[in-house]
Picture 1 (tube, rainbow, N blue to C red):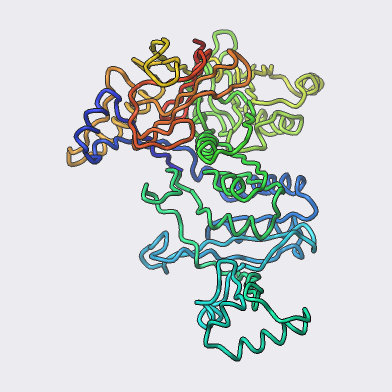
Picture 2: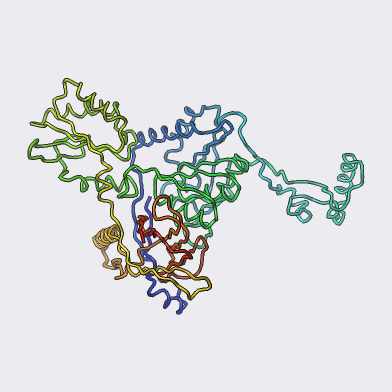
Length: 551
């Protein structure tokens, strides 16, 4: 997935633009793209990874739970087989066809228009929480009684008496007297259609979210699902107060819908872009939630594919070595040991993230024997992210009598954390008595993010090289750099530990301001206010990196 990254308007010119009542020009939306994730696995590795995830998800599901898995036409039928194995074929309820309408998502030459995705619906047992009536009135009933039906999908006797349907009134009156033993009054219900009809497994009434600001739901997240899709799923398979979990949460639509429908929610995602998008979305919806971060040391880049792309630059002296098997990331030329092969875990492969005895045996019995053809390899370096029991692994290595190569273990997190970039900010902090309520004012005068600047330079360079017509205009950053800021939060409660967002602003990609969750039509002027004296300030740049400054 490519994330579009927009430079915001420089606050120094925002006021002039607003006075001129100018619409946004194309140059105002200066943007570049960043690869967040993509087709980084082959099919076998992806299915192995998905199998592990589905097993873990099943282990935390309640007895009356359901699971819905949404995939596209590439891989869905393979995952269906995994789900049959994990949940049981008898637990399969439906293959739901979600068809988008319109022209479809992909229209390829020599193919039919691809216009749907499958959703696989399984339950843990035969007695799940399920409500399969849609609450709608059928077309035939609406055609006959539509003008008499109220907002609760009911016909009242008073309304029916005013109609010309005397036969229906007579039938309803007899039934009412038989049941209640009295004549019906005008506000009694003559017919109730509130239960509706059963929901079918072809959903053709839910369009996709169009990727533009005209759609109220749009949060600028490329895989965003429509709220109506999740509303239907959540209302069918849960009651108020239940917990709904989305382990591949994306733009946070499940969490947002749960908040509206009175359900508790769990949102998980490996990408920080997902967490930040969902967090900002829930703030706007005034939801109560906590954020828990799983720290694994991968703080330099926001996703595994970026980290793997840069890994050779992070390990001192690591270079490609053609004589080595692909198992090895490269080698270091050491003055004492000579050629030292280096193993680095593949962050795309969950089976290698933890160094355990199984992985160590694989290294000893599969990878190291291939080094025997190379002269004078006396030492290897093994990097790990997490380790099961380093003492047991070290003991296992020492007991292997056939092993005549020295092994050094290194923690990859130490390298990644040590070089994690920090953004820089210049600001003024003062009391402000010009407002209705006395406030503290922070005015940002300069912001610099080396990480953002490097990405922009890289984008400019590639774009210039690919620009055959010479029309590309390089993206430039102003002297103040304020257009690189997306979000500012002030903590007036504590100067360490858990973050308290006591005052915050988000500069949307259109440069309009959202202040403490409330959207406005104002442009940012470089300032943020809070009632109490701020102790810490958190700034998120447009690429998603966050830096905390103690004030």
